[in-house]
Image (cartoon, rainbow, N blue to C red; front, side):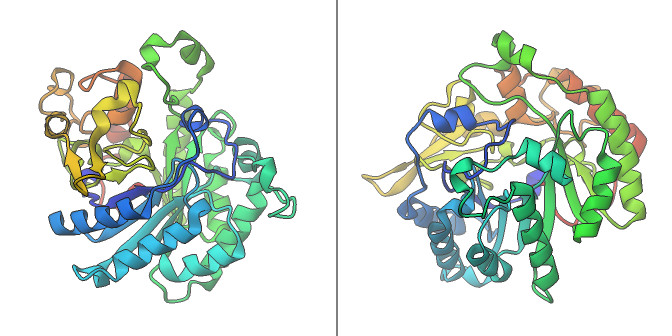
Length: 383
C-alpha cells in the first residue's frame, strides 16, 4: 500500500512544547508567534466535515509542538470522534509524540491510542543530546532527562498493553551522532520491546525563504547520505533477522505502486488542521497565516462567519497534479512508481517549486530500491 493511501484527519494541536530539540524544523516559526492551540470548535467541525466526506475513521495528533501538552483538548477531541453518530465506533487514534509525559497521560494513552509513534533518536546519550528537556519542566519530571522519562513510558506502555489494540513504535531522526549506530539502535529498541521503527534522514528546517536562497542555512546543514545508506542497509537486514521492522522515509512506497509520493498530494483525504484555523496538506506546514514559500500547502481555512471550511480548490488541484507521471525528471526513472517524485514538502522547502527535484534524495531512493527491491505491505505506514 503506497503511503498516499494513509487516509486520516490530523490535528496540529498546539505550538507548546516541553523539549528543546536541536534540529527542530519549526522552532523559529513557533517561537515567533503567540502560543496557539487548535480550538475545539474547529476540531469538532473538522471531524463532522471529514466524516461526511471520507470513509476513513482514522484520526491523528501531531505537532507543531507536543500534542500531550494540551491533554484536555486531546481527550475532548478523541471522545467527540469516538462518540460521533457517523461511524464513531470505528474510530482509531494515532499520535506522534515525544513521549515525555506524566503518568496521568500515560494511563489514559494505554486505553485510548491505537498507534503511538515516539519521536525517539535512540540510546540515552543520543536522545539526551538531540532532544533535551526544556528546563521549565525540570521540576515536573524530577530533574530526569527526556531520555529517562521517554524510556520509562515506553517500557510501561509495552509491558501493560496486554491484549489492547496498541502499537508503540519509534520515529527516529538520523543525524551525525547516530548515523553510524543504526545496528546498535536495532538492539536498543528491541530490548525496549519496540518492533516497528521508521528512520528519517535529517532535513532542512522551514523558514521564510526556500533553502536554495538561504546561504546561511545551506552552510549550517550537514548530512552524509552515503554513510546513512550504508548503515541503513546493514541495519535493515540485521533488524529483519531479529523480527524488527527498520524503515526509512526514503522507502515509504516500496510496498506498493503510486505516482504520488504521499498524502500531501491528496489533501482532502488527509487534511491537517492547524492551531490558527487553516487546513494544511503537509506536516512541514504547521501554521497557515504566514506560510511564505510553503503557501501551496495551505488548502483551506475555517470561516467563523459561515461556520464551514473554505477550500482553495486551485491549490488542491495543483497538488493533485504533482506526481511522477507529470514531471519531466521522473519520466525515465525506474522507481517512479515506488517514489512518486519524493517528498513534496522537502522539495518545495528546498527548491521553492512544486515540480522541483531533490537530486540527492532521488539518487538515494534509486540505490535503496536497487538493493532492497519491493516488499510486502507495511504493517504500519510512516507517521
